[in-house]
Length: 157
Image (cartoon, rainbow, N blue to C red):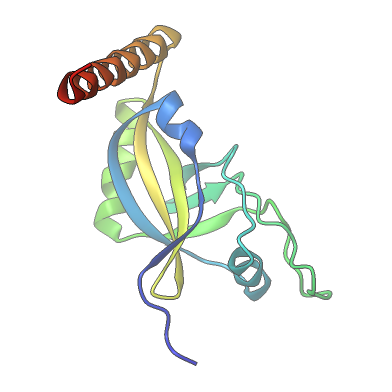
């Protein structure tokens, strides 16, 4: 069997970009069991309530729902268990400092296969307030209207 190449997105957390201001992103590996990988290959997962924490120098992904593998037996996994993330020691030290002092949070943006291995894109993020969300929506609508007007002007309408 040929080795997988490239990046295949399993699931992305679109709500995170709406609810948080993304400051920095990191790519991390995941410690998984076999039935979790098989379930992910079927394209089943949810990042809806997911977040990451740093406990005792280790980063843990919590709240990710990977459903049980349909053809799994007694070796099946628990769908919402805590999963360890694989990061370099220096990256973990940066994350510890930033999450402790500035009140930032770690949010998973997407889960994907990269060269056959499961990776998670982790974001260092700051929560948006309601008025920030309204401003972002208004700005996006204004930019869309400007683009439409420019398109109409180019066509001669």
